[in-house]
Length: 134
Image (tube, rainbow, N blue to C red; front, side, top):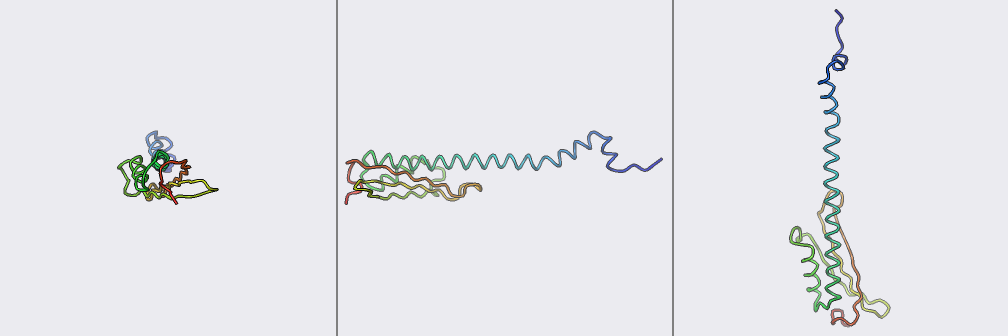
C-alpha cells in the first residue's frame, strides 16, 4: 500500500477542508467586523461634534450674553459621555463690517480611524446682544 500524502488525506475528509477554510477566513471576518465598528464610531463622533458646534452657533444667534453661554450650549448638545475631551472655542470674527462668530468644536481621542474630530460653524450676529461688542 502506498503512503498517502497529508494534503490528499485532507481532500478526502470534508471536515478537514472546512477547518482549513475557517482558519483562513476567520481572521479576515473578525478584522472586517472591527473595521465596521470603528468606522461607525468615527461617524457618530463626527456628527456629535458637528451638532455641538451648530448648537453653539445657534445659541449665539439666539442672543447668548457671554462666550461661556455659547460654550455651555455646545457642551450640552454634545452630551455628557466624552465631554471631558471636547474643546469648544468661540471667536468673534468681524468681516466686511459685519459681526460674525465662529464656534469651533474639537474632540480628541476618538477612534483609531479618526483620532480628532473637528467642526467649525460661523454665524452672523444681526443686532443680537452684545456678544462681540467692540
